[in-house]
Image 1 (cartoon, rainbow, N blue to C red):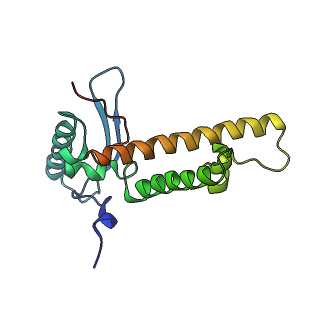
Image 2 (cartoon, rainbow, N blue to C red):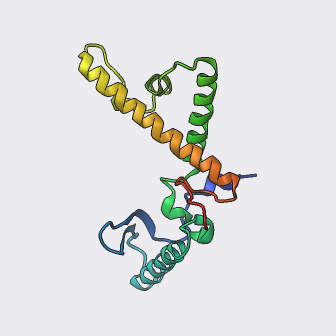
Image 3 (spheres, rainbow, N blue to C red):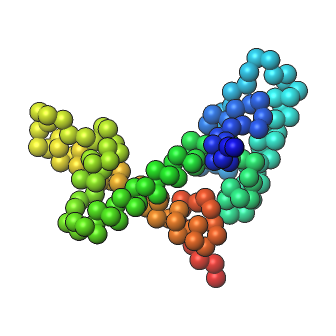
Length: 170
């Protein structure tokens, strides 16, 4: 028997969405897809129209994947079982460490978990380089904790998955 989360990132079309980006200064999206050579142009056009409809549906309201569940494959790199699991694990580890050793710095937690390989100090690094790496590691951990905490808080009020802060409605 298989679990649903194992198939989060599998596509339901022959086109594979490889990049989805909201453009900053204009009301448009950049969508990059991979199409296999045996896909007819008619089928590719139909499937691209399907993805465009999903993106419009997704952005018509709150931008929640639950409003356009067929758009899951577009977000497989950002919101996947592995990404959610990692965030929750980091939040839990942070809470355990801070409970037992409140003076622990975020960069120390990041180094223990090896969260950012580029921010790991190496033998022979100058003190200024080590300080910069500690700052980068602390920012990495802080970012993960923010996303993980928002994910938990939002799930607690029935909004899942969403990393951003939900502003209360008036």
